[in-house]
Image 1: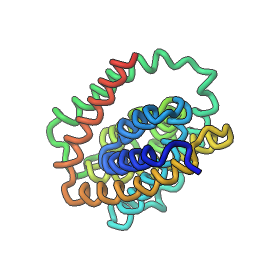
Image 2 (image 1 turned 90 degrees about the horizontal axis):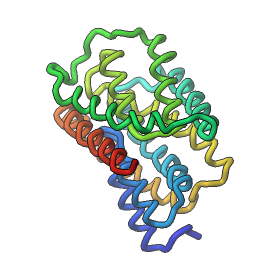
Image 3 (image 1 turned 135 degrees about the horizontal axis):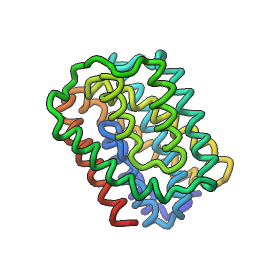
Length: 251
């Protein structure tokens, strides 16, 4: 039934719970789930594909949790989500045709810059500021660019969406976190659609991980809403630096 032994399924479920918790607050859940899947015997493509499956459930849970608490109007985000979905498909379609080595080499330093921005910039809190881009311009520029990257490569997508919402849309930390989840879900689903047709997904194991992701995402979103920027900022900095270090040491 499962693609791996039952004891490995249990280990993967625990990893998915932790990934859902971290991802619902600061993004970067793949840092936890992907290495465990590779250790369990998944090929890189199978690990990426299955991570999109289980991660989509976690992102959906977090988005609904934030929406119910009034931190994001999910309906008003429907068109940016459609843009993210389509852009992610385009990225996934071109994954074998575009050179990505340059992006991979630059990515760790960009993540370090994001960590420094959130760690050192004064005045970042849960309070909104004046936006630099209007809603339509944001949906037609930042959203497709980041979602395209998610379909093409993926690591750090949550951090990039967070930075865009804070720096360009002028949102406070908690509000930016809430808005990130729906777009992350849409970009996950776009790439997942392509991976599903290619037949690379561990469906049985991935769905067990998805149930665990839901639990972790609910807990993480609840804590983020209670603590706000006091929790989200340091965790985002740690996740961005950890991902940067992993990319530097694996290159």
